[in-house]
Image 1 (spheres, chains in turn orange, green):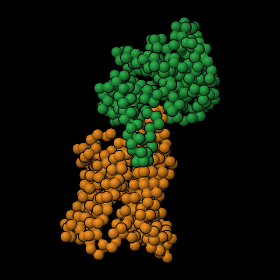
Image 2 (spheres, each protein chain N blue to C red):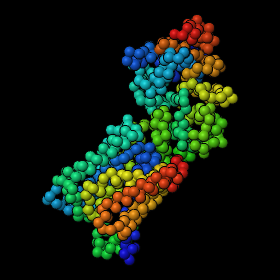
Image 3 (cartoon, rainbow over the protein chains, first blue to last red):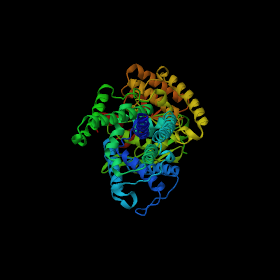
Image 4 (tube, one colour):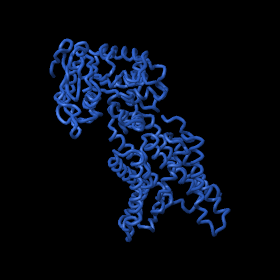
Length: 307
Length: 263
């Protein structure tokens, strides 16, 4: 029973990472936008939904007690809008310059979450975020299975929509941008408009994933949105195969499996005194996996063809 | 819309350049150049290195904004419009070094040039999938036809990176044709093309021209210019030197001076 509960919890977490990876795949895999600040958009989604849906709290602004669905929609809108602004501000930047800028945005978002105590609860985070299946919380197995079904549904919807878009004329323009912006402009495509759209849609998906995660766990804090998250998602996309939506989902499952597995192994095998330090082995395990994939299959498990 | 002097039949101008100039700081790349390209002709722009041909070409293509003067397309002043608007106004360009989308199939490369596709608007793919599909089917048929016409029909599913230099020129022609242009700008269509394929390129340009499409081309290969172009404009040092048929300008002492005098 407990194993089943854990398996459901594990898969739910992995699927939320899969959602973020799908958003990154639209930006990087399709459009070639080097976003290294995705943790910032996930955080914006999570905090937006949390502020709107939590019960009133005298210690901070917000706590509007709104329905969860409103929180999720607002999370997408907010993260999408911020992403659009970032996209518009970085139109002239490519590759490494774009990476540094987006990284900076994520750091700013994280620092705001940490310091704007009256809005975000500061380092203590925000609790009492309503859960979609809250009534089941007393029965762990049923609760986790319900969450898993929820996560499966959202991931599937996102996957189908993104797959439809990737095959559409709209997706074709994004791929053209990835290959050669000047040639795309010569064919009448507004590079500016499509780049901003790719930023916004990808950002909205990341924001939704952040909100879903916040509501499943019920608690968020600034340290959930450190650059480690960005690193994990990038590894998932590279392992799965950038450009492939199926690869994005598969990569998330595998990398999260290794992350969680190595964590369990460390806590089982390493003496208690050394566990805090041994936790770094998780990042080592992911790093080694990344190296192996890049050496053996540089285009990722399912990234064979990039079109 | 003015009538073009000296062009076959004195037809109306598709493209008019009015006293165009481009300065880069103190450097004058193009100084006060005017010319008209008549509907249906193949118009050549030649001149020694540094004559300002490429800048002139960029002005017409919209990738560079003129310091002074106007670019008229079908009588409309487009000088201030960004490059990506030109193709919607009937002006398509190719690149000196072709820019195919290397990882996309030849078919996708050509489909991208289609203008006004509903499916390129994000939400139309969910709101009107039927219309998107129908347009796409029609576009696909036309793209296949063009790829066959440009002798690339057997490669439609291949990624564009497998093409040779000459085939890339042909792909660019297929791509611009997809946009139903009134005028095509060709930037050195003979550069980097082997002799056999060059004959094909020339032949196809003439065949496209026979369909009523106008060309403006920049070229170093004088043989190609004299075979293709109805009229030629010679530039040197950013200025207009003379204009006429290829034979006329080849006899012009000013032109000989510009090419041989090492201006």
